[in-house]
Length: 488
Image 1 (spheres, helix red, strand yellow):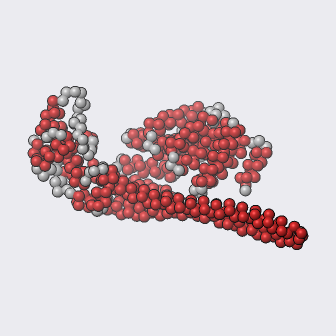
Image 2: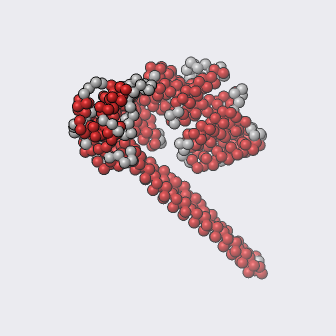
């Protein structure tokens, strides 16, 4: 009601900038309450209105709001397009446009970081810094009365994220220290610090930051954020080698994720139920109005009773027919929601297999269990705290036609190829160090993968003079890991 009154007054007195700010606040309110449907409908309405009016600030605000809605729906590429359009419409020379332009840069950095587009993030950071400099903003003023203090903190945090993902830990640490002067204790600040400690191998410090994040998330109505922080904690525990605790936390997260999906489905069903109830209430009100009208007509116009009754009856039938059609459409929508829930269940099952496969790949890369000749599908399943059926399904999902045994053999063959290329060990010793029980077994596997014996492979490596880079073995058709992985 207050927003509607403000919009009326700003429209009456032609205060376009404040009018669009009210629209932006209303859309942010919808997003805060997770009313994505209302937010999207409102944002699209504002875009159409701004296009009709051709007002630059209005176009910037409308595309910014639409970008926020799409980002909440994980449509990052489309959101980036709208944030970029907002920057084009907002003038660099108008002082009142500065804040929204800087917010566009902050949202774009978040989209690029989430989508792991780090080259674009680096280019954006340079443009973002130029924006601060062009407007004469002191980038080192961390005083409390600096109106750009929080925005500067997010800028330094974006720089730290880029260098962290690029492997420059020392540079990232400097930017994190600078960002902490501006936004100490913020959730994003704690997330980046947790990521830095994890990459630096300081797992105890990473867990301490994760504890603070869980406290902040549990104190607010952010169930999905708390879920993300718990998932990050499980990854830290896995990196520490605490596989049992990590597996226990992963199991609890699976049940929590199911609850989140169910809550989302229930919320959508409740919205539809509210619409249906509103239609029923309106139909009841229409019936009540009709009965009162007929009663008054009977008392005042006895002579026209028959004609009035026929007219109103036909009118009621038409309305009832429309209401029935609406109810049928709602029932069809409910059926679509049920189908969507079923599809989400299938997606959760695929997500579980994907998670298991990622854990398997990480285990094979970091711990090299395939070098043990006794490794088989049962021992590998025990290492991953699962059973052989789930393990076989996960491998088939992402490596079609490959069994657990073939998967282990491919890792051994690739490692043997690495030893043949990088060492002068005898073939028998290569077979033993690669996890094969005998040279005959390795020869058979090597022929299947490379189409030649190990001796022929080594001879081909020495005779090949067509410009192969140093340290790069021949590529086979069934290798399970890259050369870098083999060297590790």
